[in-house]
Image (cartoon, rainbow, N blue to C red; front, side, top):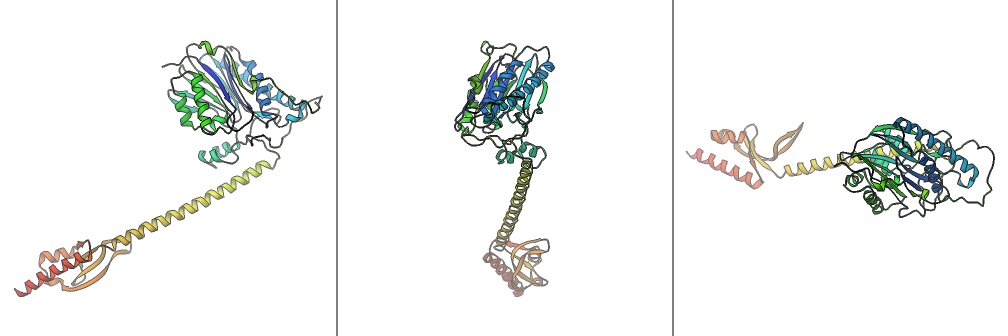
Amino acid sequence: MTKAGDSAAISHVGKVRSNNQDSGYAGTHLFVVADGMGGHAGGDVASAIALKRIMQADSDFTSAQDAEAALQTAISAANSELAEVVFEHPELGGMGTTVDAIVAVGDEVAIAHIGDSRIYLLRDGELSQITTDHTFVQRLVDSGRITEEEAMVHPRRSVLMRVLGDVDSNPEIDTMVMRTHPGDRWLLCSDGLSGVVDKDAIQGTLALELPARQVGERLIRKALDGGAPDNVTVVIFDVGAERSPSAQTPVIVGSASRPLAFQNDVPKRTGLLPSLRLHSGRGTSSGPSHFEPASDDYLDELIEEDARRAKRRRLTWLVGSIALVLAIALALLLGYTWTQTRYFVGADEDTVVIFQGIQQDVGPFSLSTEHNDTGIPISMLSTYDRQQVEQTISASSLEEAEEIVSRLRTTTSKDDEE
């Protein structure tokens, strides 16, 4: 079933943070999520400024390539505006924001991405992550130094390597053009969703045959059920033959939906923009979310930490290997102990012998030992009994083995009397 061209934007402050630093937009052609950072004083401002500048790219473009170029220009301009605001309002120093944006043009979309917010595509029931996180931990995953599972719990998983703000005057922005199909469902979300709700749960919710807003509300609820330690923002865009009436009106959510507010107790600066620089970690009233390097030594610190993690992994492997060896040794010991509860009747060179164990060897080790030499000559046995003894006669206990020997002895005695 082809879904109608529906869309929705929803944002929630979450269960821990005191203010919403995310911004979201579902427009006529443009869809954006921005996740701000910089603590109580700046994250909301950063995402709102970036979103309101990028909203100017909500136009009917003649080609997806034109839309891609327009997104690149708008995001770069938003970065310059953020740097200028920090210069004019130094109390906002260190603020920044991620940006994920999609512009729909005919049967194609233009995509722009920077940071760790994500864009997903649900097509024919299968969910694909379109963007790659610009985080230090993602680099470790890409290089094979840690696994995806380790990345989910890595203590530095929120360290951004690329972001809009006053850190870089010319940040690298990922852009692409993709063909889309009727029935496709696109999701843009902050890491407040992707960091809490796993991919399978996101896929199952997006696959529901429900309007975009209802699906968005269910995704928000899943994040809240998971604790929602960060703000949660989702923007959903369904590809259809025509847009639904509710999707014709642009929707702004999160911090961008409120008027911008600056602290005015710090004198403003005037003049040309200063050279951009790295800022220290960004404080927040409810614990850190994202932060940038505070010095040139920070990357070295992270590499050293990664080396420590690798050492811990090697130690874990060593402990695991020792545990496995001990488990195998225990299994062998228990197996050997069991074999010693078994008996069989066989022959040595010339007499009948009761053996303890089983009639097998493990390499150079025998799993049986001589328990009792009965003294019954092999030569005195009947042809049938001799063959049975030479091939060994199994017994489940010593008593059963002694009964077999007693029978052989009786048969031998009868033969002697005859």
